[in-house]
Image: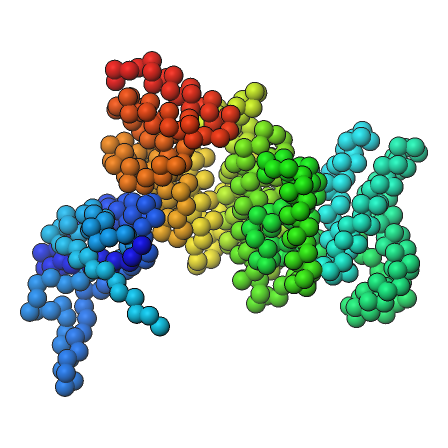
Length: 116
Length: 425
């Protein structure tokens, strides 16, 4: 089994804001049912985290910019780590991700372990 | 709130009194002696106590019961210990020297069989028996033997294996404790956090051994569960070990135990949760489960015992509502994020069917692909029933082939029959 990083991206500006506690709960349920389904296949390495929308970008010569990032529309909103035998299987796991229902996407990347 | 697990001695016949006392008192005296001598001398402690019971069975048969059988046992065990110390000078030199540091300097060694010292000794022994130097299976065996007073026969029956294997397993485990020189003492506050988790794991497995064992002996299995509860309750009673995790585990046990009487019919056949007579659920144990769950919710950390207790709590709600299954599903989702297990994966999929519908659950179930597990095929059999009965029957037949116990086989056969009666749906 290899580990794969799932990177969730979406455009914060077009992302629908939950209008009610019920909608928020329904949203949480979608994510939990999806990640729980991966865990039930014993294919979850790390449930990962969500990221706060604001951030900083550090560039050369002490240039520090604020995020969200004006030059790119899509931001990373979260990540999880799954385990699978191949990138095809990992990609299959990503297909049910709720980010896809709100115009986002999932990038699937194999993690290359740095040998100590 | 207190729990009383058959500690009381009623007007028992002598033939049942001795096995009963063996179960309740053997472990107490052995614990006290082990705390006094150190675990290296556990064999001597066990010999002294076995000897005491041998004398009791001979003498009580001839002369009738003493007024207070328990006090009589304590008295004889004390004398036997003193005799032993006097007779075996080498042992006495070694042990007495150590004891003299910890007890007040008197000529006679104090063998303290007070309620408090028995309690402290049993607690200390729990940490010894559950020490991670032994594999989990050996720890459960040791717990049954030294903490619960079960004989080799009973342990062999519970594990569905032969006496010889159990005897060897216990000897090896005791040898390991001796070799590692594990101290019989209650761990310090800083150690408790780390070592308590291994104790809880053993108590959890012990309870499961009783609850899910395929042994035919239902009384024995329930005794094992009650013993696991009694030991967990010892931890709740002690201020230092009365943590939210311990309360969560005890809550979980109470909720499960509340269904003891509803889980079997008079022939000993399993009755599934959805078919149980809910009037047979024990309301008192459910109330206790709720009490301990409240106690458990005081910490900031959440354990798998909390989540499992939460799941068990929702199972005590009789009405089959969407809210109930939605809560159970979310608790299973969280449980799987903490720790994967095939049984949690299967139960989560069952809850998914109840909360989100069978069609979604079938897709998820097939991804789990635990094709060697009879419960997996049973689940798919249930999910396909009324949707595609041919597929349901095919899965149930796979389940029948993989199942081991007669009780499981009977249950699956009945489901196949039910499916065959409605072939067109």
